[in-house]
Image (cartoon, rainbow, N blue to C red):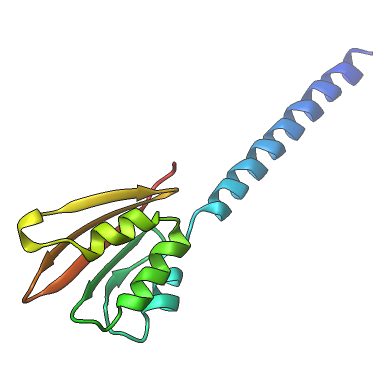
Length: 124
């Protein structure tokens, strides 16, 4: 009987470990792949400077890429107010930042260099 109870405890622990692993995998799958999102929305504009699943850096000069940037921001869950803030950023405003679920964006604007924006994936 003791062996049977020990097996049940081990089986229960194994089931708990599997459930925890599944939860981790589901949480990871819910995180955006910033490189993929960037390619989809900014890939043809030449704006992407660096990208990975956890990081995206882009510079947008002139009107080229603004529509794609707006689509990217919407897909990542940034509010319309943040999209408006980005569009109204002036050089004097310095570095700005905003959060969406699982993503932080920081950006600057300079009339000569355009909009430089960096997205970083977060756990929350």
